[in-house]
Length: 294
Length: 320
Image (cartoon, rainbow over all chains, first blue to last red; front, side, top):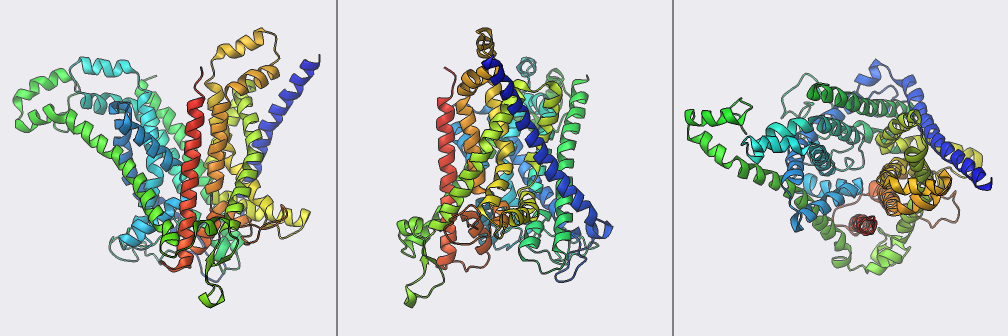
């Protein structure tokens, strides 16, 4: 009887633990979205921030976040893909492989502020680019690359060996097998993983404070000359992202409506990140269906 | 890379070999070597990045000791932090004890709160949850993992800090706010690693315990959790490492006062928050700036230490 009672109590403890986590999540997301959607309107999403008056928006910050994500993914995806292929298909157990794994682990667990400082040292100061999108994108790449390698490696490892064997048996080389047989089969996992990484990167701030910078020049959204300093697509201009903006507004802004801007930015940020997560699940499922014809 | 042909079958490739020129034959012969080398090169890039981070951060971080002649013991254990005091008044001093203690207190308390809850939730997910509960909890944890750390910081700042101020007094910017924010932030990390560890246990162990008449709670407490302990410890260390290295979420809620705290409601400062706030306002090459790089080196060292711990435990944890 006693043990049964203990079992019942324990079960209750486990249920309440799980409920507590759900409540925390509910409070967090509810709080952010509730306060946020009161301050979001079209002007907030499109107008640039103001330095000392109320009524500024976060238009350029939203653009910067997406553009920085794009730039960083342009570097991360090819390198991560190839490195992941190596780890899954070619790497033999041995010293080199062991060191690569250790490097991946090290990079994954580095505090993002340390990655930011490394970026400051190399991409901002040594290259002479200053605070810029390019420096930020490279710092984010340091941050992304290990996750990307892992995801590619895992999705390739999940491809059944029979596929490889039949391709090799038909006379294809190893590389042809990887490129035409293994990669397409690993594609769904790869897409899902990439989107989830994108969501993480989208919210990253600490690594960007001292690389992409904490300010954004006045942008002219009709100027698409990549060398002009006010062009939105110039990779060598400083660019404050949405996540950095939340931090900066709270710590040093001189506007009267800090609360409104921060609420709105947080809601937009969380909304977009949740959208990334949802679309990762959804897209993964769709692509999987397409590829397996089920 | 194979752009010259659109055929899928290697048998057709062979007949095309005769039709096309030397370039295709060379590609056919060497594509395997090419593939292996280019992928290996990219994998080596990862090593290259890691090594350069260690080298550059170390070089910068050690200059406090090498160039400015500050003793490492002073840096680690002194509370005398006067980086801008002129030489006549006792010289600039960069004792960072208060920052180090701050980082340790905040991250250890966060883990103390977070680890039990995480393990409870992980056990729940693997052993107890019915299908519907699992289907609710799993995406919930993914969302929690996806929320950016500045947002955690901001909710701490706008919800938790005023709440602490009104219900417990003080300014609200406190150790309490700091570790509560962190403990929620590291929940998903610890939960998912712990759940993986529990999932990887052989099913027979559970069945054997149940068959011997144990209740579910006895099975969990006496068989499953002890058997998965190395995985659980790995999860907790990963959480600790995240908490120790987190910068912005902490900086926003802890008040950043450089004084050793006496109560849980006192403000505090950490290594990461000092770096975040001062790096932009100090001059490169100046002692103050160098001290911040030494703090970064300390963070890097701690993160390497955590990895070593994890490797130790995961090697120990192979099921015998």
